[in-house]
Length: 505
Image (cartoon, rainbow, N blue to C red; front, side, top):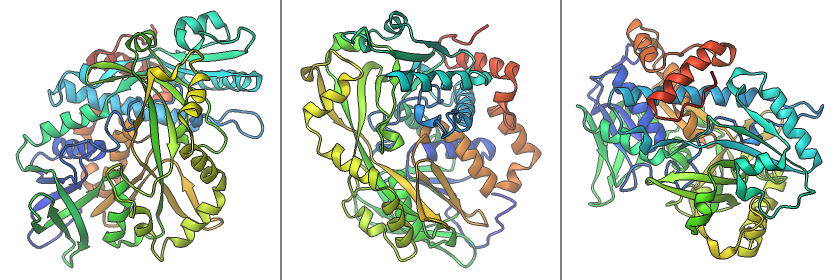
């Protein structure tokens, strides 16, 4: 398979992918394009792909490009706005769009309209201090060409033109501000993931197994990995041997990483955060809103709980969601067990987990308050964005689970992180993905990083380099520093993905 892994002994597959979500789908397609003769086995505990975090109802729905998510642009103590993370995420999303364009061009996925649509991205705030922040954010971001098309206004009539519902019934004296990026998108990662797996399973030497649970992982003396699998329908158990294993099981990744017993995985813990949406049931209201409107998170709220009034396309139909409302559950997956959290506590991670808990008491308090919310409490939060909202037009929908990463820290003992973390061995024979946001939207960049860690020698070959650049023409280049390339890339991907031509001339 690779020049790097000179393993001996019989194997059942070159690669085993655990979990049938967007991450495994992306890695599987990348590897088969780079090395067509590769043999791949994919195992999923549920009966369908993308049923957990990648599903459209389970939080993954916005094409996270940092256009509107205010948590990616924090205000520093000196009053300036930090845009480094926003620029990185915007670049990563452009990488994803290039890869998806390649898939469309090669016929590896269906009509792009099934999984990506053009939906403007807006940030919306009220109150003098928040308005000042949004203006500083706008000024900082528009210095970068990735955000040069952003519009800013404090004109209430223009905001109403952009998103009528958020201004209806609002006090005229209230000071508001908004930004808008017409290039924003809505992405149905569930549909995209299933499309990629449908293509993968039609290829030679690829086997996709649903209703199969990974019970254990062990590295053999010959350098290969022994994976113990249970068929949940028949109860049959068997062992599979592979040269490389990827643990991309969302909230289920941490327990499997612990089972692998690799030294690089020691000290990691997980903090589960659940979510809920209010889903609009009134078709007339749904039709009146066509944007993703993000606001500022409450003090102590996790990044995944940034409130937004969100237009989405789900199964070809327009939907309108508000939330997510955060909550706490000891489950690591929506279809998980309440024992997931206690079972994940080990001798090597108990100190980081306790330390992270002590340093995040505000978060714990916030989550408890969210769990105790009544329908009327949720309606009041919605009314901040949609003043005329009525409870009869909305119903509660349960979203997915997110397991935030807890890792060792020399100074604090343990810290809680809200990004993603790739954990891999020195020999590159196994890798696991932990964490959540921005997750799905940056899956391609995350998997390219994994290839660099685990398939470095192959990635350095002329063959792989040429293929990578065919899939992602700007590979190795910084769009934020090249205005012409940025415009050219966005114009091309917008055309291929059938997104409205919103790239400025």
